[in-house]
Amino acid sequence: MNIGRKFLQLQVPFLAGMISLVLGCSSVQFTHHSRGIEPPFCKNGLHDSQAVVYWDTVWRKDQKEIALREKMLERGITSFFGKVQCMKIIKISRSVGNKPVSACSEVEFAADARSLNADKAIVLRIEEYGPNLMIYLSPILWQTRNEVMMRTKILDIQKGLIDTDTSSHWYRGGPFMLLGTDSLNRDLQATLEGLFLDAKE
Image 1 (tube, rainbow, N blue to C red):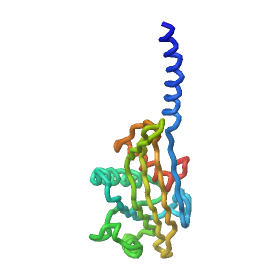
Image 2: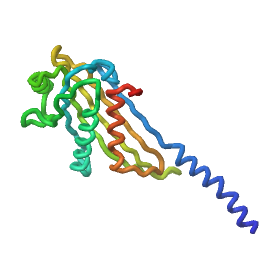
Image 3: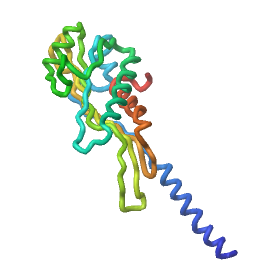
Image 4: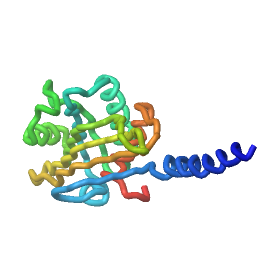
């Protein structure tokens, strides 16, 4: 009986510490580096604009489930820009003519946007979109985190200038958390909100 009590006395603080570790280390982080106007873009240059959104992906060579990710991205990007109120979205596209966005130049984006009477072209390049599992040789044996890495360019069609060239990185996760593709849309929406909308919106 005494041995059992001693065992419990030793185990309870250990388990409490582990629970605290698991619950206390989950985190969300959003960072960006901009050349030109800073986020939120709806407050700094896009308000009342008429814009065309061009987007594409640049995956790493070992990227898995590309078709699934691109379908989710299309749905998420369309949803976000379909409800944004600071500007009028004329079109959302992955191509200019028959050419994919990833192969187009800024001159081609500007020409296409101008033909649609837009005054801004928003170009999104998604470089990472997915859950990543990391294994450690430490008390924290593993963690997952959802990541969205994106490069955003905004072109001023009338002035022929680049308003901004912004690289952003969002991640959410922590030790012993299980995250999967089902929750990725939440992270994409948060990334786009961080780039385009004021926190109060």
